[in-house]
Length: 302
Image (cartoon, rainbow, N blue to C red):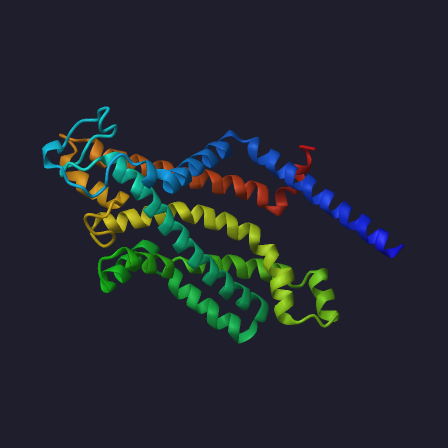
């Protein structure tokens, strides 16, 4: 009898979760801007995944006889000052820019979530020490601090990734700590303590899932800022070095030819703008759906 009741309870829980998920998907799709953001992000991801395989030319091969050609059938987005195909470089740059954004955001998320979870749940001097580190990091403008770190380490994409990862984890730590402080005194956590559940299990099984939603939203929004920061540091010569196809270096190369060859700088500039816009719209949409305070709104869609 108990086995039958347990199976029924499991089926009911699964049905309830599926219903809540479908309602959240409906709430997300109800806003056209959310769909636009998702479409832009999917398009950039597809371009990054298959772009290097469908690029018509090698992104680093120079053909000086074809330099500064206008967009045409042979070169849909024209050529740059060294005769390289802009479309091919744009597609290869999409994989590079998106890959860097994923790696940097992953490092920020892992480091910040770990520190925030430890500070919020442990409390006491551990919380004070870790939060003072967060305050020190947040006292400096992120891009300026990344510029200093990248300048000290030397120009390279690896150093840019390290610099951007080191200046962005504090926002995750503060967000996770605040969520954990609001959650650890709730009844289900107190019940786990009364049952002598280990502190590690409470932190990973009961507290960590509560911060997943806000962290996913922050990570989505950060993807756009990381791409923008990478392009900015590459633009001033601290990131990707020639002849690497990267959106920031393409902007830097094209700034000297804005009048005679506008496409060299404008094409990667539009790509950066659309990518950042896509992640921003997607992050806003996820925030609306994953925010627990908006569950009442989602319920109205049923």
